[in-house]
Image: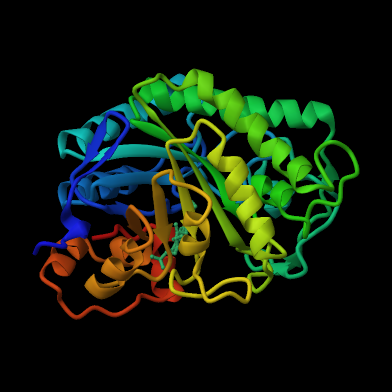
Length: 356
Ligand SMILES: Cc1cc2nc3c(=O)[nH]c(=O)nc-3n(C[C@H](O)[C@H](O)[C@H](O)COP(=O)(O)O)c2cc1C
């Protein structure tokens, strides 16, 4: 096919992706005690690489032991044992000809104190999500407004986790600035009510993200990648538009564009949806202000949606479809009829049931 962009290689920096397909970062809550994922969870990532996925993301890795964790049994990449556990997984992904990227996050106000070793909940402002925590059935705990000490401490957690990823051999690192977690909480006026240098104007709300990017960048060797994920939706209060206008979204992308990032990943509920009352989708609005490689995700489930999403982006990610179907890439290559997968189906990710 002359226009087979989906299965054409993509050069990003010194890397050549064999196609434009990635497995989206997916949390698996399989790491009790020592913050190392279960063996079958790690093997799942290797299997996706062996089954033609060009870009393989880890689940969101928690950046510290104090307040970063949002769900039980999440992973970390800070100790020798954690780094050693990931190293063979990363090698196996690379042996399959794929690029391995570690995603790291801090959940901010989405924490529940009981599962954080230090029992803290911190956020830009003492404002909770409107909905209850679906996992506890209780309201979220009112977070402490982050002090300068907290901000420095959290940034350091991102730096140390990035160092862990580099040592484990990952090709790249992604800073998770999406889905209503801590960095997104700073970016959005919905959750950031600060009156200091980290709140108020777009530039101030971007400051925390900028400081993380600039602190992490020096520990990433020149031959590895640094990505940033952003979204206009959050896992709590999911209907809320986290940015108030097209201009506000594009301003944030404009700031990201000026940072030393190798790609911007735009996470959507549905890649097709037009945004901010315009007749453009999130990828199109993003493309208007950046020429950086762009990754898009959200309800890409078959050949037609993958081709369509790729018109406005460079890489497409699948979450639920690749979670549940190990042959997804082969299936879309053959243009098999496929259905979107539901969130309820994907909940198997959080069980001990080994995935295909
Ligand atoms: C089980 C599960 C876990 C997820 N965990 C993460 C995560 O750790 N980090 C992240 O950025 N997104 C996470 N997501 C969101 C996905 O990366 C993706 O954006 C979302 O599933 C939409 O893509 P899809 O329609 O192809 O499933 C998760 C999604 C699922 C289904």
